[in-house]
Image (cartoon, rainbow, N blue to C red):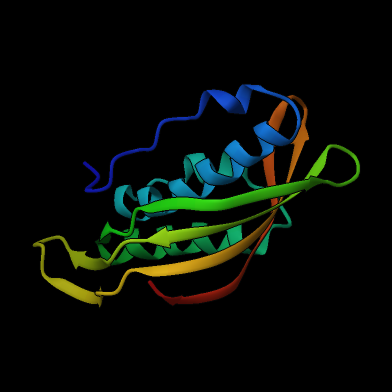
Length: 148
């Protein structure tokens, strides 16, 4: 069982357009701490463009945690300053600030392996597109990260 609850898929993701893209972006980022906690990459992979480097890195981190029998506790995110513009071919450029709570990596016994004790504000850019009726993350770039 995950220490981080699985985020609920926002109803706005059923919408076309900018509102749907913003919802897809925040949902995808909310899946990040869940995936590292639950050891489940299925949801992340289902939303990832095959060429998304950040997405592939998250999947690799999940695999690494599973192999090491470790998982994350904490690290959930809240979002603000969400904005976006329409790109081409059903693509949207989304910018936001993700506030990530402290987290730690623990082993199977609960022993802390690595500690991330600070809350951070991360300025993130994403490229989101609709493909075959679903939202897909094409790119994620963390422009800056600072203590909140």
